Length: 120
Image (tube, rainbow, N blue to C red; front, side):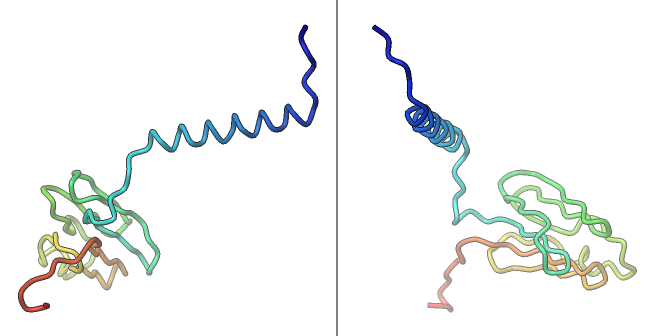
């Protein structure tokens, strides 16, 4: 003999199925390692992109192109007249920063800072 499902029971079953679905989707997502270095690109103080240094990628901010390759982030193309951000070269260690004042853009490497003999 089959019993009818009450409306309250249906709501509880739907909630359980929804939570199980969300947990399943979250389990498929890759874990983010907080110690992994990431290039943070900001324009006017607002975060535009977060580029992991272990994958080659590019980010276009309008007046500046940021390229990540070989574990290094750099300003590849800039529309500013002096192009000092391009001449600075690449950065790869946590705490390093490239600043382009005309474009109001910063590229900062985040991650767990390295400790050397001087900072102990």
